[in-house]
Length: 121
Length: 121
DNA sequence: CTAACCGTACTATTCGTGATAATACAGTTA
DNA sequence: TAACTGTATTATCACGAATAGTACGGTTAG
Image (cartoon, rainbow over all chains, first blue to last red):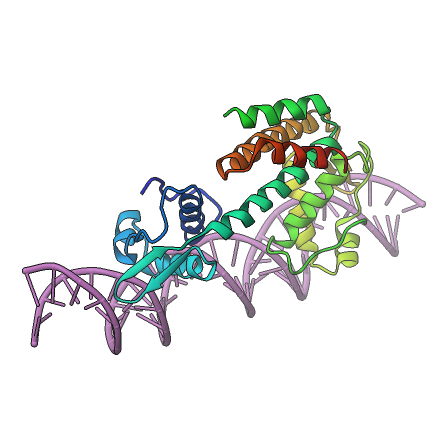
């Protein structure tokens, strides 16, 4: 596991797990059909209740990121389409944030510098 | 009041009120030293409990957006510095989101188009 | 076959927070 | 003085997150 639980985070634990695994899948760190850690072993590793992991895995499956086979395990889906959806969401987020900056009185020059900074990181 | 409470919003009511008033202050809709609506009248208008408004007003004051005088009311602070802080936060958000898009495989061209869209809205 | 895994389901309980309700008090002002 | 302000306090309710314990059926390696 690359990440850990942040207990100071206001978001619930199961949600942190969901977004953490979603990111790994979307970034290709976890390729399609690769098995996820089992519910019980991940619960041990993160020191949380197995039910919390189960809740996260259930949401990952209903959101299409994984598929589960009782008795075998949970596996990464083929997420090409989901990746496309996430790309569109991120572009929309950029539009909104840029507009927000402009409303706050930030100059176009400063905004473009920030964009350039994000592209080169 | 320009906005209303969205009961389908997952965020708590008092938080919606805080960010709503923060935005009005930062955008200059409410100029410094202008009185806010009283706790009780805003509670009536939004059909929520006065304690909820009180909680929102307390946070606005501790965050520096307003100052309160018992017996007189709550007033808008001089928020020039807060505005500057908010500007820097927004620029950082742009950097992070642009980077996120790039990691997802979005091309620089598409990103720049989104930025342009945000600037012209 | 069987033991040890897997996902899944269910109930019960604890805990924190948001929200409401009902007062109460001191300062301000027309 | 009456009608407003902000502020504080206590109690109660609802809901969701999280934990705990148990159980069931499918899979797989020995």
